[in-house]
Every structure is written in structure tokens, then in C-alpha cells.
Length: 282
Image (cartoon, rainbow, N blue to C red; front, side, top):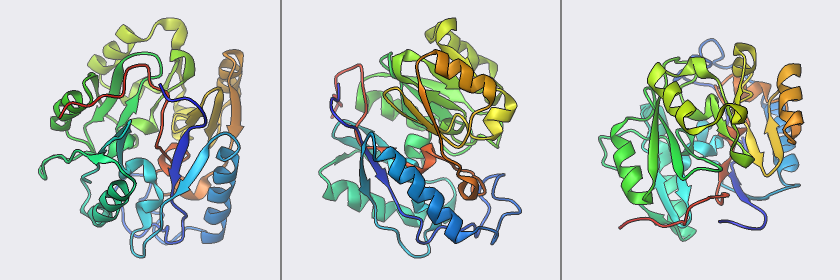
């Protein structure tokens, strides 16, 4: 299990924009960003996170506006990374830069076949109490990737089918929390996926959010120990999470919501609190 301060990768929004539409949130927002406000919001998130974690920076690149969403760079466990292979062609030019960064920083790359889509920690999340990975499919990750993840990381992959295109990555509607709690929006999943969640998470550990909180990207949160950073929380959700002992940090991220992302999308944990040994099969 990782000890000490966690490490997080972020990418400054130097070239962030909405120039194309690859999710429903982007539609109608092309060319409507406020770059100055986006920079302020990103810097605020960076500075707040830096109080409880160590931040590393990825160099932004011209013509790659979505590099700012580092959660989609790949999935990391220990010294092993599975780099993303993006479904939208608009994001595929990011891949060489991401692989180069991982290799330069000493990670062992496990690369999926070219015909399998997988979008990193946007669609693969480490549970905080159980030895499994919550792994989405349906929009931006293909279920064929799941068998590779199970083999490479030697742990159970819980396949969660996403059914609402607004929640196109699992990290937009599900967030594992410290202590084995799970913050999630059940309406984003099919019935089998809800049963898979309820089989593993006892009722007192489930924190289900309303449609209003889901649309406000409350589940797209960064959890560091007892701290939760998110775009916003309704009063009932604040009360529930506060009663569980969490310290909530509201960080408005309006400009990033226009691209379909929020706090979690803007971060990639390079280290994580894991409950199983960090071992990958060759």
C-alpha cells in the first residue's frame, strides 16, 4: 500500500479549448470558453490539491486541447501503466506524448492491441477497500480491454456498463472513496452493473447521488484520504459526506464542464492507496 503524500499528474490548460464535439457536454460550447477563467479555475484546483498531495506537471502541446484531462492518459498501478488508446480520433494524437512521458518516468508500459479502445483512469478505478477495479465500457472503452487489465494487474475487474451518453466515462458517475465508501449515480448504469455494485458494497457504504448532483459532476471528484475535491455538492450530499467524516472542498470548474470534464478528469493519480500488492503479470 502506498504511504506518504500521494502524487498527481496535471497538465496546464495553455491550449485548452472546445473545438470539436466528442461528448454531449461539448455540443453548443464550441468556441465559448473563457480562457482566463479556465486558467484561474485550473490553478485553484492545482493549489488546493497541492496542500495535500504532490503535483507533477505534464507539458501542454499545441493543437491538443484535451491533454489537460490527464485522467485519460492511462491507468496506473504501482510501476505499471496501460496507456490509453482513444476512441475519438481527435484525441489519438495525444498518445505518443503520453507514452513518451510514462517511459521517461520509469513506468513499465503494457500496450493494448490497436483495435481495442481504452481511456485510462477515466474508465478504470481502484476500489479503496476491495481488491478489484471498477472498469467502465459502453462509450469510450471497449469491454475487450477488461480481460487484459485483469491479467496484467492480477485482480478482479468489475465490468460496469455505462448507458447514459452524458456519463461517457465511469469517473463521471462513480468515485471510490476512502474507507470503502462508493459515491455513484445508479441511473448511469444498467441493471447488471448495479447488482455488481450492490454485491460488493454494503448499503451503509453506498452514497448514491441525485440527478442534479450527477449533472454537476459531483462524482467526478478527487479523493485524497478524507478530503474530497469536486465542482460542487448539493446540501443533502454535503450533509451525508460530512457525516461520514469527509472534508469537502468545492472548486468551481465551469469552463471544464463545457468540455465534459471536472476535477477528477483534470488529474491522474500516479500513486494510490491500494489494498492489494502492486503486482502485474508479465
